[in-house]
Length: 136
Image (cartoon, rainbow, N blue to C red; front, side):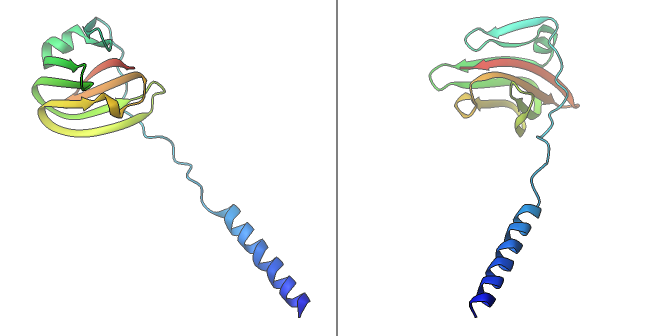
């Protein structure tokens, strides 16, 4: 009887080990962001967080960008509907993609890790307006 229990225990144990080793792993790559466009004619809009974007994009699409130092919020106001925002960390990994569908959006920087961030603002007409900023 002891031999039968031992054989069952060894068989059951090896089956559990084999099943665990054969279980599927999450090998999915990190979410990909829109292509990050490099900034060319850089305009620094907010010095405190080094918020930068192309001068022509700022002139064409934005009404204003406001950084609230007390709440650490970044408010972006556009002259057309913002359809989506993507926040891409300094490693190029998409951390947040937010549907907006409004002319103004507020981002709570407390929700983001410290580091350099790429912000992709998609406005109506599928135009992507890139920006960068640092979160401390």
